[in-house]
Every structure is written in structure tokens, then in C-alpha cells.
Image (cartoon, rainbow over all chains, first blue to last red; front, side, top):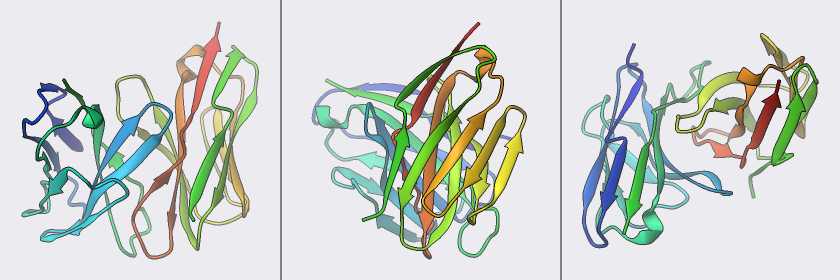
Length: 115
Length: 110
């Protein structure tokens, strides 16, 4: 089982560059989300999706865009990278709604450095 | 405002020395409390879900408990391979959004 797959694992960007972090899951989960993890701040929600075609903002959405054209994929776009976006990014997926087993499964993360 | 607070921030234990990690929370309509383990350079790995006060779950040397205000992760006779950061998160109401604490970094020495 692949679970949640994120690419790339590492990335260095220059300020102002754009890029897309890829996330794919093979568990047919409705709910997908993106978090960033910074020292001392825990995991913070950037954007999330409750199904194909539906996305919404989380706690720290500025500077990021998402789309969900399929159930499996949920890419995160950095529009114009800034040093403040240096972080480790995690994608997660779970069953949503009234499902009993709603634990989230996480990818291995993308470590992004913006110089 | 929904909030999750974990303590202590860091914990050093001798192998075999049992202890507990705390997760206190304030949330409107708890829908589930989740414990995760995170190893350096890896994504969080799911451990337990607790849904209601009084519920307990066990896995090997770990036992999670839940009250109306907090959850404990008890570690019995820990081994060095239990060293990791343990994260607590909650879901509230009718949302699937997770609210995380900042974690407890556990180090177990032989």
C-alpha cells in the first residue's frame, strides 16, 4: 500500500519563484489537507478539501493555492515563494463525514527552503 | 477558541522508567482525540483515536486514556526505540479539521 505520497522530498527555491508540491493518496479518502510544521508551532492547517472540486482555507492560507480535480490528488502551489515559507510541508488524507474511522494518514513530508 | 496543549515539551527517561504524557484540550463538541508518533524526518504515524471520556486504548507499551478535559499517553517500561515526538490532535463538531498540540519529545536512554 502506497498510502499518501508526497513529492519532492526536498526543494530549495529562490525568493519569488513558484512551485507545486504534489500529493497523491490511494485509499479513496474524501478528505485531504496540507499542513506546515515549524519548530515550536506544531502542525498548522494551510488548505483542505472535503472532496473533488471542493477546497477551503485553513489557519495559514496566504501565499498558497490548492485545487482538487480528482479524489486522489491534492497539489499545493506556492505562488511567489518567500523566506517565511521555509518549512516542512505535510499532506494528509482521511475518510470524512460520518465515517467511524476518521484518523488521518500523513505523507513523509517535503522540506522546503526559500533563500 | 479551540486549543490543544501538550506537556511536558521534552521528557528524558531511563529504559524501563514508566511515565505519562499529557494533552489538555478545549474544543466545542469533541469528535475525536488522536495520538500520533513522529520520528525525525518522517510524517506523523497514527497511534490511537479516543472518542469519549473514560475510553482507553492500548498498543504494546502505550496506553491512551481520555477525560472531558485531557488525555494521557502512558508509556510502560519504555525502550530506546520508543524515542520520538508524540503529537496530540482533536477534531471538533462537524468538521474534519485537526487541531494539533506542539508535541512532546521523548528520549529513552539505555
